[in-house]
Image 1 (cartoon, rainbow, N blue to C red):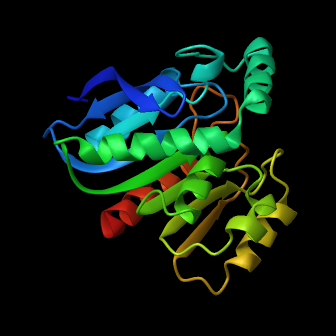
Image 2: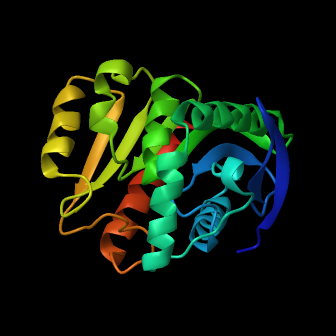
Length: 232
């Protein structure tokens, strides 16, 4: 895809952690903080980074599980799922959000970043992208199938920056009632855009998973590119 990628170090509140930096072919552009699923900055997340770098963005994906082991990568088999859930449950969300704040500041300081900065997250990272946007850490946010967002509405529901959310209509991890609750909460908020994809399961964007749905993934990517193009 004619992109350049490498690990860099970021100074956090309680130590250094790594982040996967991917530069576009032109070498510069607006920034995206890419937030991992519960499986770490694995092959899929690095492929997503390359995809958005090919679209013209400078992408930085922080290793959010670094306190339990640097650069953890998990697959989507039963063993990978078990370890991923264990790591997610052990993660201090407040510390993860603080790590994202440091990642955003690092990204903004890079000479390659010539515009504003968005967060883009999947699954656990989708919820973190929502929180990052609601709390004003980024200029705009994108959240793919972010679990638990409906439980955050009271604390972080007054979103004042552009936010795009994607959900699968057949998501077995996020019930339709939760998506309806989110949509109803933001019904009058013109900053928030929500898309729900027919017959799409949790993880529909990930072509490493059995739940991958090419049509929904393509539609969501298109919506995301239009949104980022308008906002960044």
